[in-house]
Amino acid sequence: MRKCKAIAFALMFLSIMFTSAIQAEVKFDDYFVDQTMRIDYYHMADKTTEFITLDKVYQQGTWAGSPNSLGEPFDNGLYYIKIYDDISGTLIYSKGFSSYCSEYMTTNMAAEGIKRTYHETALIPFPKKKIRFTLERRNRQNQLGVIFSQVIDPQSVEINKEALIDGVTVYEILKNGHPHHKVDLAFIAEGYTLKEEVKFKQDVERVVEEFFKQEPYKSRKMDFNIYGLFKASRESGPDEPLEGAFKNTVLGASFNALGLNRYMLTEENRAMRDIAGHVPYDAIVIIVNSQRYGGGGIYNSYCCFTSDNEWTVYLFLHEFGHSFSGLADEYYGSPVSYNEFYPRGIEPIDPNITALLDPTNLKWKHLVIKGTPIPTPWGKEEYEKLTGKDRADFLQSRSKKLKSLVGAFEGAGYTATGLYRPMLNCIMFSKGAIPYCKVCEDTISKVIGYYSL
Ligand SMILES: [Zn+2]
Image (cartoon, rainbow, N blue to C red):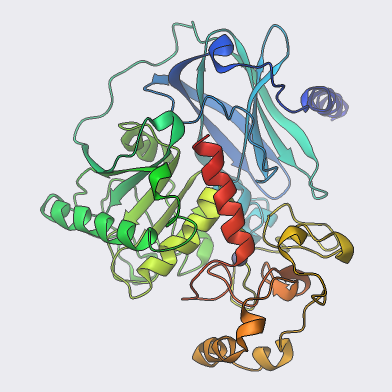
């Protein structure tokens, strides 16, 4: 036990030593070639312990990210990938992310000590020389500390260079330029049989058309490349465990993720990456062939949503808000699987919710008009007495002035008190609400800028 503590302390020290931002003199061509290193690993955890082991490291096609964006500036996500040049110790790449495993760690099963293992992937530009691959995780005070660190040699004979899997058809839906300077979205088919390939292509085109009607995507359409990736599933539709329905599909997407019926995720990370690797991609979007309401999104991992529900477009925009820009859920009062997702009295890292510990220094204060009351009264008590459609009608009935006001509205992040959202309503707050609030829109714009620099 004492030895473990000593190792933990040494790793923490390593982290403090190396957490400086990427310096301007770190140039892509000095450290990387224009290819992708896919680092697969296993992530095992219960509530209080987590463990990482490397699986396989791959050399794959063109790097999708911008050579001008080696350091990601958002300070968001529960985890961080940090890549150091092994000899000099220079930080040469970093990116925040969240994971299915970390959500599992907040459940009752994890609290009972039941460990589960998830397969995850880190994508980085392919290094020229030995690197130190490091994963950091935030503690309850949101401070980052190292949980895994291992040297990877890009010249090693164990780097996997095998051909991509067969049976994947690539559709180029929108091409605006070189992947280095565009946001490259890979839409993957899940639960579509061979006979449903045409339907998949039509579904992608339909949701993409709706996507670009929405700001900030509408004004930034020229900054995107979009691909459809089809691999036939043997059976149609996703798993629905509560109905006793299990389907043989390419990604094994399932309703009832973490025991929540409407929550849908996939645990088939390897299969997902094998398909996505057919194109240079910055983000994965999974379209699940189903009429039921469901979806999920994990920051810098992937999002998924069902194709044929009346709320399909809303689901896509909401889940993509999570996976692409690390937006928090602004809603509260609906059942979730998590226990105390945001610790009391700690400012969340998420860009669109706040604990309002310092009302004079709101993190979105650049969008607040002078004189706006903070916190901002919005009829919360009246709203909480209502349910379902009456709540939507209530939000709709508020004055135009209140609906367009940016302030701090109490009730956010699954919590009725102590957490605040930026506006009365938002895609991240209530079902069917469109558009995004100004803070979410501003955050998404900055993420588009990061990928298209
Ligand atoms: Zn919002």
